[in-house]
Image (cartoon, rainbow, N blue to C red):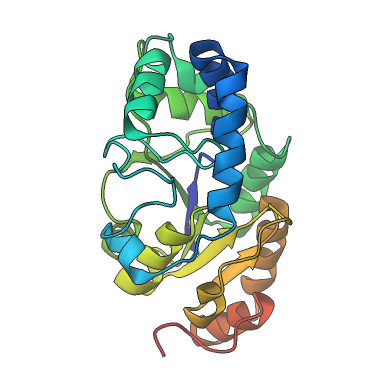
Length: 256
């Protein structure tokens, strides 16, 4: 059977936060945005992944007493209060087809993903937590954006709940995300493998990742190379899981 793989969009493929920082500078001024980024860096240095974060019983590491609005993804580069985030999102939501304006984090990687998926007959779905903006729906904007980057007929699911429950319901084999808490959802609530894209070399990979069976890669390009090796023709399903664990530097399955 072909691999069933889910890719998160923002932070994995799309440079959402870079564009949001630009809009925050327009809205709040460069001086305030600079302070928010400095504060975020200080908060990030002390963030650890815990099961409580996956269930929402602790803050998302944003340094605010108030949680981010449920319908919007949390911001990592800006340590904003919930009120500031609401103002920023309200500002962004006035832009026509905002989600089609984002840049690709790794230029050309979506086109490569499309080619590799076609070669290996993978079933790909893209997951995202995007609020609506003026123009087409977030789903349609995301589909158009992916097509513009070289992935034809993309399946996009705009999510609100646990990534793990979605993975279980769709029978996914692998979920790729840039948020440790989303990866934690996956290993707790499903049998899918979770791969964390962790690009920031200045920040230590959460210690819980290895313990919980979450694989870590530095880029989507590296992730694709791992997936290709996992899905070699001679690999059967049980062996595939063992091989995935070895390639991702993991000793045993999180479900073991």
